[in-house]
Length: 130
Image (cartoon, rainbow, N blue to C red; front, side, top):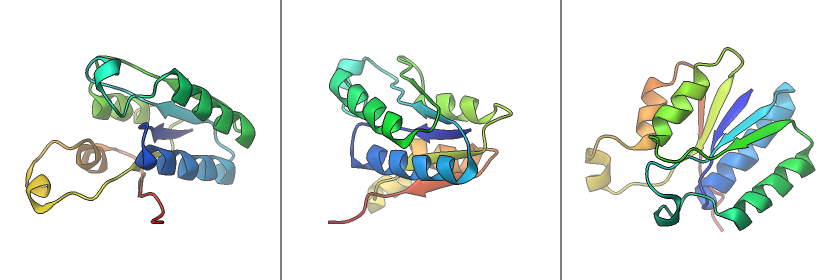
């Protein structure tokens, strides 16, 4: 199983595309997790109904078995790490964004926590520049 940390932005779209490619390559299922620590209506990276329909349409096109979950009120990194503890989890795919020097000093970013704590391979991707 390939686990994708999905966000409703270009970074999440890149993670989805790369996760689908990895699942096809490995003949694996997909688990797409779009988690939010707060309320969904205040988290811009949490997918709304329209975005979820678009993601599900994209997943249906690729003909890879998938599950899409949207846990609310959880730490996204902890949710992804818990999924990676499953025996069938092979790889985690997440989108990463450029951080300024001050941002690099701050600890606790989701991507940093995932890369450092995930017990299995993590593929960190960026959107293709236009």
